[in-house]
Image 1 (tube, chains in turn purple, red):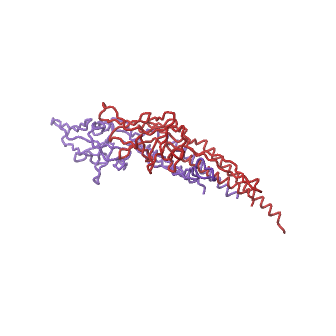
Image 2 (cartoon, rainbow over the protein chains, first blue to last red):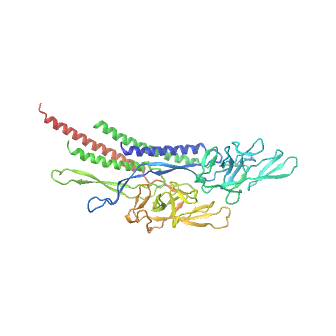
Image 3 (spheres, rainbow over the protein chains, first blue to last red):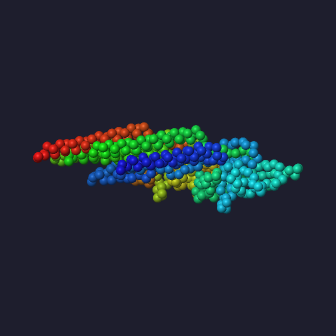
Length: 261
Length: 253
């Protein structure tokens, strides 16, 4: 059948994928520590219809060739790791990372996942855990007689003991950094996993070796820009329409052919 | 059957190629750094010889040279997104190790610390792929110099880690490779670097260049070709009627 039908179809599929990416960004506009995605488009392979420099006759050659495109596709979705807004919550166990770095989260299968979501809780044993109940690394255990908890910008966790027991330092949080943050694989639940593309984690103390500072009593909001996503959505919708118009034009021609011959 | 039908058919076939190229431009209306390349004219080729006086076949005159007119800049604010100015192109390494050029500016650092674009092509510097020290913050200056600074040492000035292979293509014609990248049209320069033109090659950081396909103009072209198709088909239909009239006339009973 007509080649342009299939070429326009690749455009429709790619725009559909982009629409899903935009919808996911908009749905996560209130997710703590969420990083927006961007659909990366690429043109498909070209068909060499007329090679440049081919012989036309004994003396002359074609001056330029003809490379016929076969459409487009979404080659990747890329996470954009810009800083989200910092929202003050006044909760002692809420932490925001101002700058680069990830919290390490112990997974049930023994692997480590990484998260920017610092809305931590205490488990029944007094361990610092994520909102999903997974322990963070290095483990921080708060003694039962602690009256208040302070986390410094450098990650040092100090507790003030009840009944004038004085203060005591119970550990220091660490951050992991990656060469290529975009190479981390999102696994849902605000968690990322390292891949070959992200490289190995570089563990650093907060505020040292390029890692960001911690801010107690604050959370990092999603970095989705609603206006930008709306503009992207309009553009996607129009691009979709243009491609469906191409299909209906090709369809109209084929119908004309069928009706008239 | 009258040969007129074949003349119309050859017009329909060559216009089919053109429509495929137009649809490809429409499909790539959202591809970052996509450049339209296809320009077409058709010329009448007269077939010589006795009895062929009315035989004109359409011949396609194709100009498939990359049109480097700018696309819409899209501001992203990301330091490694660059938009190339004027007719600047960026050198990348192809899968087979040759040099090719692109207008894509969505750069990133891969797991080995080399700069690549989102399509996975390694970006070339003046001396091969650009390697970036681990954990540094990168910046790209307007002339394409890549700077790295260590966030933990704000007092140390940023060091230069490489210079992007930026070339001004205002005096070099580029054609497309099968993988969508560009290469110089001259046979001797295929898969190689070329001399930069007189204009300064420069980039703007924090923005991407959208596709330069003009959807309105392309749609109008598409409608034009749809109508021409119908016109050619009418001619085919007309020959059918003529043939029928001929056979009716010759009927013996």
